[in-house]
Length: 428
Image (cartoon, rainbow, N blue to C red):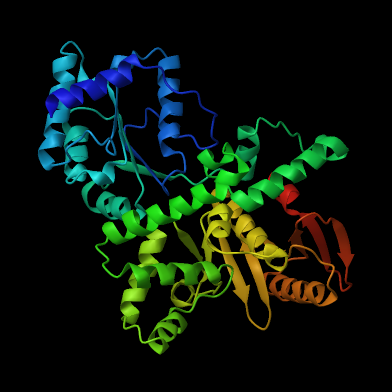
């Protein structure tokens, strides 16, 4: 095993780093903390490592002082002893190096049993320059809280946001000027339609259109069978798959696990309600879905109240659920939620007599509607905004649409604006 590790280490040191496009997320390289990147599979954590390794090289750090190991490399025999051999192999290859000055990057570390003890020992005795990625948020959060307390900084990596998507498309758009260019704006709308349909997983951006959905469906299968069934030892994958698809069908709605439980029960499928709640927790742990809390003044009430469910990426949503023209609003709402999530804003939904999709930092009320051509739709969105704005003491609300922009004057010193989603995103 040690000889295989030496081969893997030397491969990294002798091969050229792949070309990459810079992501917005940046983490410190000299914090003297264990930096952990968590997020869904295929979201680009490895390339974020490469992006920061390149920064080290640009600062003049010799590549031999940078150790990179991907624990998904099929050549590795991931037993606890493997971790002990890592440093032995590195020292034997480079006996002249002072490991205290080296940088250690471990990719998909959750695949190695006992990784947390190894990371703690490495940090305490050898190097303060340790960087980890993992695809299971609960694993890392729990282990960090118990084993790495006080030693770590955690960063979440999501699929590309829309601005990064445009960068990957090599499309430069200046919102201060280019909204006044019909040609550039038309191209922007075209790209937003693509982003709405296929999302921001980096690999998918570059695939031919006919392969995008198929690849996203493969991502779902890996999440189902490897990240969920295998990781959590779930034997009844039929019930698990049914539950996940019901989550997808409830996108943007208040989720009732009790209702799904009754549906299964009516079909003669025996599964405990507590089991379904665990499945929901697991689905959030692996970054398949995110839950949105309802606003309450009481934090306890907010945590206990029923939540709305969204997928981590609109492309994943469309790959699992057929969405006709009438359901494009679901994709748009999920996309707006994702952009708010990635921006780091504090977001909740509001519901009393009426409902408002998003309250952002308790400063902005936002409704999402694909278009406002239907009078009943417009009335419903405005009423929800009015109630939310009155509750929070706000003077205006925003309706995010696909491509409509105008002011809606409804009197009583209250103004509503409709704004295209791509323009709203540029303002985040």
